[in-house]
Structures are given as C-alpha cells and as structure tokens.
Length: 405
Image: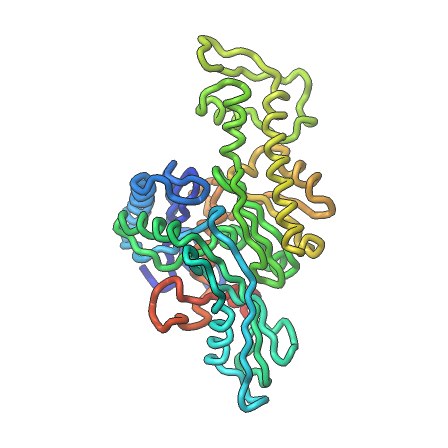
C-alpha cells in the first residue's frame, strides 16, 4: 500500500473490523474498504479463545485485502478492556547552557524521562502520549523545539496493559499471518473517530458502548487526559432481557434491536410486542414498556458508572465540549435522554463517523475510523525510546492533528 494509506484492525468483544483508509488532501481521511466479522473470542477485553479471534482477524483482513487487491502489510490494532489503565507521568530536563533553543533530542529525553515509571512485573506500556510541555514553568507549549529556555517539562499520558493480554492479542494477529505495526488505546481511537477538534480542545468525553465493554475517553486541551473500559455494555442488556423474559439469547437480541428503547416514560401504555419464550410453542403478547424498563435499568447503571469516571478524572466541570455517545449500544432510542439525566449540566449527543455512501450507515465504526485517523495524521513525534523498531517503543502525539500544530 502507499505511504498515505493505512490498514487497521479493531478487535472488539463481539466483532472484528478491518478497515483501510487513505489520506486525501492534507486532512481528510477517506475509507476505502471495510469488513466486519462476528467474533465471540473475547471476554471483558481479553482473549479467551485464541483460535476464534485469529479466525475472525484472518476473515476480516482477507476480505479487505481481496477487495482492494493489495497486501495490507502491518496493521494498527486496537487494545482495550479492564486490563488497561492510564496514568499521567511527568518528565524533567534541564537545558544546558541555559537559554539555548530546545532541540529534538531534548524533547526525546524529557519524554523518555516521563516514561521511566516503575510498573508491576505483569504490566507493560502500550502507548505514551505527550499531553503538555512546559518551558521554564510556562504551560501549554505545544511544540517546544526551537524555544529558548533553561528547564523543559512534560506531562505524558501512559497507557499500560496486562502483559499477557497484549501478548495474546499480538499472537492472534500473527496466527492470521499478519503483523502489528502499532497498538492504539481503543478509547483514544473512539474519541478521534467522533469528536471534533474544537471538542478535543474545549474538553469533551466520548462514551463508546460496545458489546462487552463501555469505553470512556476524556480529552482536554487537545489530548487524552483519562481513559477507561467499564466491563458492562450492550451485551449485558441482552442477557437481562433473556433472563427476565425467559427467552433465548437470539430472541433477546431481536427484541432489543427491533422493539427496544432506554426511556420507559416515552413508551405509550397501549404499545404491545410479541415475545417467544423458552419452551413455548407460540409467541405471547407483552407490554413494550416492560421490555424498555428492563433496558433502561441497565443503561442507567452504565450512565452512572460513566459519571463516576468523569468525576474521578477531576475534569467533569471542565467538559465544555460535552459528552458524545457512540457504538452499537448507543443507538437505542432514549439512551441520550438517560445520559442527559445522569450527567447533569453536560451536553450529550450521539454520533458515528461519516462513511462514504457505499458503506451505508454502520454503528460501531468510531474505533476503526479513529485508528486510521491516528495512523494517518499523528505522525511519529519522536524516535523509538530504545533505539529499536518495536511498536511499543514509539511515541506519537495528538498535537500533530490539532490545528496542524
């Protein structure tokens, strides 16, 4: 593929998506091919069935490769789940002699200093995202190279993950005869996929409600400030329906998609649905409000957990850009209303990336589109920390995609 084209792989709880996109002009990311394959090989963001995941990876990647008649090459792969964590770390470097212009090497050294945090033996760094530089105490310096000063500081958001989970993810890709070019934190990618540049700068959160996890990413001053995966999502809604209405998993999913909603007050008292229960020969009528009440209870739980994460970040009151809901679980009518009631004083909207007309309207594409945008617009800010070429040593920055800085 050309230098202005990337191939990405989003390995989610219920599906694997492969996408190829190109950089059209200076800023537009154009999707060329997209294939989604169902996959049940993950549990809470970690691989539980290596064979199943590698099968789905192979099927999705092969379909895209055949469609475009190209070798995809190394893939940008998403990583998320409760086993991932983010921490803010600080780095410091004295500039000698004082007042000289800061160099590329100075920036490399201060970021690597921030990355020298001690992690437990079973965890490793996945990404390091420089958030903010300071020169002689002056904050909000986006690109310090060439600026004169005596002291350079950086705040870096470091994403860590379970070493075993990361190794299994890479192994699944390798078993499908593919290689990993870069692993990118899925909450970060979801934010890049649906947030505007203004929202990132003002401060905004994206909530990606998937099948097995709900990913939350908070952006401040154009960069990721907090990210987390909550182990409750739309799959739990389907399980609730199956359990409480005594249906099969397939019937529960059908009811959720065809008749579901998340706000019971908006359902009329005379609305009725047909439910096929287990061990019954015929479907029975049920008030639709009963179904929606089941769904609403779980959506409210998710919204409450999201609120706790926003408060935990310390940035709740500064989210001037509001909250953006995305993912398949955000498509249920009334979900936006439930989140508005849970997240007082915050603007809430639902969004999916704009895809070319040939792909139609598809939910759950925020992460793959965000992965592609990251790969195309967030260039290598610095050389590998260890001087090698391993993907986990690379440092990239969002600053390169915010207003061209």
